[in-house]
Each structure stands twice: as C-alpha cells, then as structure tokens.
Amino acid sequence: MHNFIGSKFKANCRQLFAAISVNLVTFSFGVYTGWSSTVAPMLKDPKQTPLDHVITDNSISWACSWGMLSAILGTFFWGMLADNFGRKTTGFLTMLPYLISWIILLVVKTETALMVSRFLGGLGASGAAINCPMYVGEVSDEAMKAGLGSLFILMYNIGVLYVYVFGVLVNYTYLNVACLAISLLFMVVWFYVPESPIFLIQKKRMDEARRSLMWFRGKDNDKEVSEEMDSMMRHSDQTDKAKLSDYKKRGTVKALLIGLVFQAGTQFSGINIILMYTVEIFKSSGSKMSPHSCTILVGVVQVIGSAVATFIVHRAGRKFFLMVTYGVTALALITIGTCFYINKVDPSINTGILPVFSLSVHVIAFSLGLGMVPYIIYTEVFPANVRNICMSMLMFFNNVLGFAIIKAYPSMSNTLHTSGYFWMFGAVCLAVVPYTYLFVPETKDKSYDEIRRELLVWFPDRKHKDKAAAMDKEATGDQADVGVDNSVVVVEATEMRVCMGRDQNCFTTPQRARDNVE
Image 1: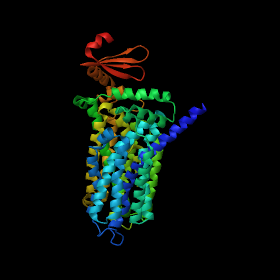
Image 2: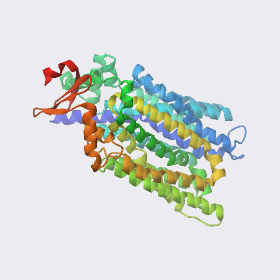
Image 3: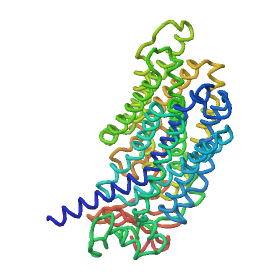
Image 4: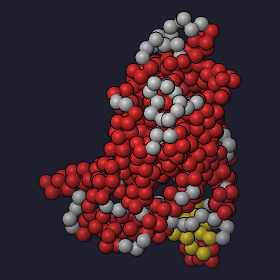
C-alpha cells in the first residue's frame, strides 16, 4: 500500500511537472497577447517610445494583428511537425519564434523589427494551441487528465497578468528581458521531460515508449505498465483514416457549423481587443481610475476566473454554461459600450468603477464559458478520425476572423465610435444564446452514440429524438445487444462494425461475414 501511494504521488508530480513545462509555451502565448496593451501607450508617446520614431494607431493595429495572420500559416504545419518529429521537438520549435522575437525587440529598435517580432510570435501562438493540449492529453492518466488539461487557459491568463504587472514596474527594455526569461526557462526544463509515449508507439519505438510511460506513471516494474501500453497500441491500430465521405455526413457537418458559430462568438466577444488594448480602453472609458491599475485588476480577475472554471465547468451542462456566459458577456459588452458613449457625450461625467467592473465580469464569463467549454464540446461532437482536420478548419477560421477584427478596431472605432464597436460585439454574443439553446446538443454525461443521434437533426430537443433515432437506424443499420457484456454489432452498407465489451472496442469486418457473426 505504501509503495502504491508513493508511486502514485511520484506519477502525479511528474505529470504536473511535464504539464507545467509544456505550458510555459502557453504562458509565453499569454505574454505575447498582453504585451501590446502595456507597450502601445509607450510607442505612441514621444517621450517614452524606445523606437526611432513615434508610431501611429494604424501601425499599432498591425502590430496587434500580425500575430493572427501568422497563426493562420501555423495551422497548416504545426500538426504535421508534431506527428512527424514528435511532441518534444515540436515544443522546442514552438518556443523558438518567441525566443527570437524578444531578442529582436531588444536588439533592433525600429518599427520594421517590431512587426517582424509580432509576426514570429503569432507562429508560436498557433503551435502552442496545437502541441500543448495534445502533449498533456497523451501523458496524463485518466484521474489527472481534466485538471492538467485546464492548465492551458490558466497558464495563458497568468502570462497575460505577468506582462501587465511588469509593464507597470519596469521600462520597455526590462519588460522584454522579463519576456525573454520565460523562453529561456522553457528551453532548460523541457530537456528533462520525456517524449509522449503515444507518439513513440506510433513510430514503433516500443522500448522508448515503455521507458517514457514508466517515468510518467512513477513505476519501475515493466509489468505494471504493460496493460496501459497494450491499450495505447490497440488504440493506435484502430484509428481509422478519414475518407471524404466522412466529412459530408450530416452529424459532422452540423458539428462543424456549431464550431464555426462558437469560434465567431469567441472573436466577437472582443476578448483579443480587450487583452491587447486594455490600457487604451480604460483611458477612453471615462473612468478616473488609473488605467494601468485597472488593467492589472482585470488580469487578476481573469486568472481567478480560469482557476475557478477548472473546478466547476464539469459540474453543470455545457449548454447551461455557454448560454449563461454568453448572456453575461453580452451585458458586459453593452455596458462597456455605454461607458464609451457617456464619455463621448460628456467627458466630465465620471463612470467610476463601472468600466473595470464590466471588464472584470466579461473576463470571468469568458474564462468560465466561452474560452473553455467550446473546446470540450469539440472533443465530444467530432469523430476521432475527422477531429484533427475539423479542428484545423476551426482554428483557420478563428485566426482569419481574429485578424480582421483586431486590424479593423482603430478604424472601426472612428467610424462607429468605440461604443458602437462594443455594442456590435454585445449583439453578436446575445444572438449566440438562442442559437445554443436551439441547435447545440447537450453533451454532458452522454455517450458518443447519443450525441451522434442528436446531431442528425437540427433541433436536438425531446420531440425530435424519435426522428433522430430513425435517421440513425437508416444511416448506420440496426444495433443488437449481444450478451450481458454490452457487445454490439452494427451493420453498415458495405461493412460491419463489431464492438466488444463495456469499453466498446470496435473492429470492422467485411459485409460477407455478417451471417457468421449473426
């Protein structure tokens, strides 16, 4: 018993160390995002700018949006690098753009250097979004997976807060040194973390995979990890490659449409505008409070919100969380827009704590729902064989839309005024609430088969369950329980899938074997 407790504690510590280590890249992602909010006022001030000239609002918008543009490119190759060269090598490559970008900012003090560094950082951002959750999911055991998986958004938010605080305490040069320090720390600690055992199994490097799994499970006996190794090998062998027809299925199409709406909702929540322009927003909101103090307070609230979210997000339904948080986000955005409008009509009116309160509510709502729950739903509504490609599509759409919104912010703020821009954000978030209620199936505590049946109809409510079941029967054939172990035979048009046992491990047989199985 003592040995079991000791090995379990050792395993948890090692998995936590590995998850925190890889998420130093995510931390840098947050630092990169929040950096522009702190630095933008310096770059526009003739007395503070470290560059060879003062830059314009248009240049600031490019500095903020270049990252989204390069992140679009990253969606095409980071997954391929991870699959071909490993999660660990990809981790080093993902941090490399950040490392180079901070060095450029320290050495070269020109607007061109600023743009190049921001472009490089965007490449690292898309790499973090792909490689970090993948690695954590592959090295965590079932008991640790949910908690360690939530570190992604938590470390991102801590990174944002980190740069907010240093932006107040130090000057431009030391701020970039503080950012560079995180990249250097990662390069050191990442050497001591093993490669993912699942990747090693896929590459048929079985001895290395066994040693890696033994390290993560804190066990010194080969026999104690054999069962998990066998399970990983079976899963690797049974992962079918997707065909074009798999992407045309009704359930996949609807899941993709749900994902596109949620990604649009994420961008139209204004989260990137808020994180990248926080100081400027508070200066324009009519509040007499210190913009930098308000910015730090928002960063603290965001970290607390993401920490709380890790404990409560699995306790309520996905739809409930999304509808409530989208509704609260909409109210917060409309309130922020109203503060801007009041300041425009009569700058003498002091809006007090209302702007910082509204932004705090906004980032809490985002951390609890918009920033986390859609990604949980994606893992539940997409079949495993199409999930990677569909996620790449969503990331591509997310980055394109994010680039357009961030780049347009200064000019649109002049056209619609900042109040109109935030009211538009609020209207979009409000529209997502009824969409979620009508079109999105509840996925909590449901099997994939139950979710798939609800995806076959547009309105997944009780009245349509019979229709969904009928359509599912027509599309996939009858299902018959075989014995008490929940074995299932699913007959399809050209092949038959046999699922054995309570874990529903499946294999495919030719249609001609149907009579033998029956």
